[in-house]
Image (cartoon, rainbow, N blue to C red):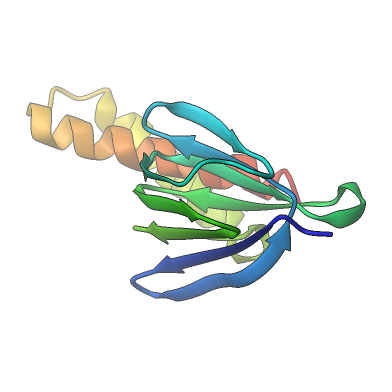
Length: 135
């Protein structure tokens, strides 16, 4: 029996809605957190990383995260993410191209704001490639 209903929403639409799961591992700005049955209510900022939802029979579903908010209230977990994807949505060639572009730009002298922009792009590209390998 599932402990949580997970819903992930982005500005582009619904990624998943009411996915029944037993355990969640979520990348937050404070580090990875594990949400198990009976978890306290909470709000947290999400960091770039991979959210893992464990469902029945030891199966898992993975989703990229790139910032946003997490709310745990009762048996409902809601994620409002800036961007989120599941493995089937990952375009590996595009992610590799984005990674190489960001790496090459970071080798150049850049203003701090631009450097931070390309560091975030590099993190997101690496995250997508990591998720693609979890298929």
